[in-house]
Image (cartoon, rainbow, N blue to C red; front, side, top):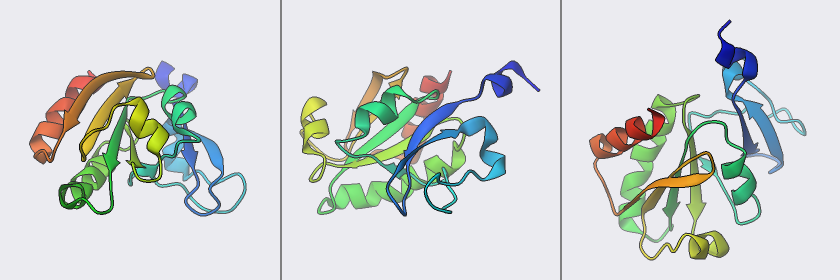
Length: 151
């Protein structure tokens, strides 16, 4: 067992079913962690929704870098980017946490990070912003940015 596996890589996730926050260890994803309140199994192969209420806890408490996609349901480029973000969440599962913020429902967070256009992707590492991209970008560009954040 490596030193990293002994220490673990905890992140906070909101259960898709009962909406309670759960601390999940990414080093133990192979054990298919379940929500503490209900039997829902967590899947980090999909972006996790983040709200005004839990944004700070989710980002600051992440032991891995975090990609956050700020979007709006009415935005065409956001809808085009969504499958790319979902694919990246699957590809980098366990090494990168991927979250989504609906700016119409999380206006405080959108204001805090001065989201003026969507889609906007912000990369966090250690709770701090390390990169920001606005507009629809090709998958290859996002992969390059993710790899830079992970290194």
